[in-house]
Image (cartoon, rainbow, N blue to C red; front, side, top):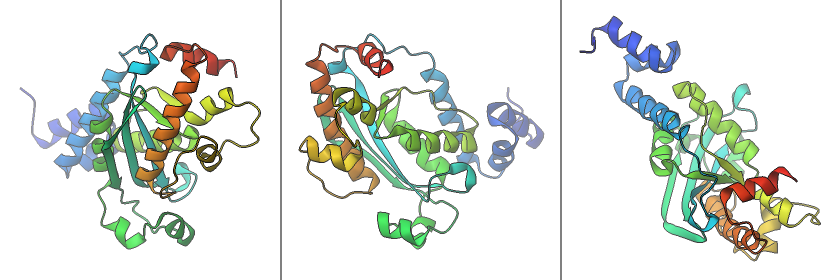
Length: 244
């Protein structure tokens, strides 16, 4: 039987995630439950091999983050998470996840103008650990896809470590890197340029869910083009990307 006295609970939580989450969780058992769930997803994900899965069968989640700036280690934070489910060449337009996130700080005026998210609105949003749990419940063990994934992966990793002392273990594909392989002649690979090139309708830029939706539509077009070049499995795609 687990020791549920304060010292016993603290030691149990410490073993799950480190001293800071343990102390925090002593005063917020809901946060402890979120943390435990996040850690279990990351642990289970390490066991999975996806390389032999045909691209047309890959279950993926295309996601986007809006943030207060560019450096999670210098005080910048996530302010919204948007995601949409994709299976092969099919976008599940109605199967989505979206949440604002409380950054525990004011949002810079230029970011408010860019995203439409105000400091007041964000201050009433769910805490980071709650939003992350919701996101990971939506993702489960699917492949993650983002455009220019370095920024999003950087913030997601920082958030996972800050809340739960774990690193991201999901496979992450970058639609920008796939576009570079397929279109080496282009001078720019930003999302706006590629949406225009592939004829994807632009709805609302710099809204996490809408950016995820548009990136998902772009991903489908890139996937079909990759398939026409005899790239059939996830492993085939990674092999091609490793050469470019």
